[in-house]
Image (cartoon, rainbow, N blue to C red; front, side):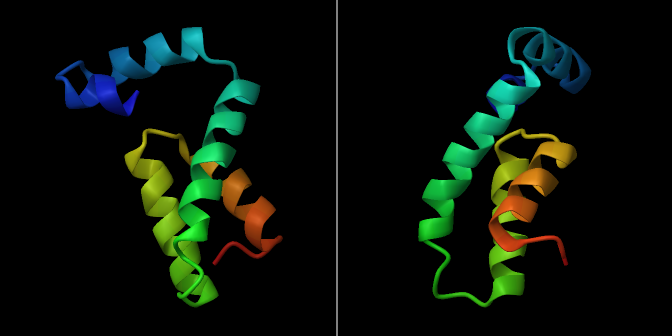
Length: 81
């Protein structure tokens, strides 16, 4: 979705196209994979900064807020911020 938006596709059209192609489970799996790689680079930061940076990283990759919150909850527990 991020790549489509970056290439000038309207955001609502990009989201609609991606929603048709990618199931929720697949998107969660992709988000977890991306987060795992990024999380390894964040170990020197405190927990609040890690959450913030991980949220921004996933948001910039085009993941929706619900997916992002689920990934962060999985990594850090119930308390998000």
